[in-house]
Length: 155
Image (cartoon, rainbow, N blue to C red; front, side, top):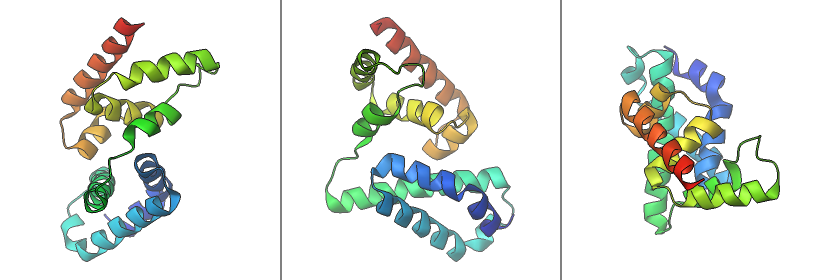
């Protein structure tokens, strides 16, 4: 599969994902560019990969590059702020519902928050989420189910 074609097709998704984990448009663009350069440097690695696998590789690389950047800057990943500001469902438009939802999300473990963001904000399926996080799709589904149960119990 051609890396350039995958990059062209999913570039906006890659940037949206990077923005969601960085809260910074410029940094998001840089992360996506770094991932693409890294892919070009390892082009032979992608020869036997399909489009879905390459897409997963990009998401994972973007996430890992951001973690490396944060470690270098000694900053904490602003995942909580992203979730509080962006994960609200379309159905919960009124302010009161948003406040309640934000408070509930804050109580979840980071792993559960991350899965909720990828599932409901990025609209990824269990397989794609698993590839990004380096876990199996069944683990994604069980964490998602556990997260939703936690939210339901709090309501």
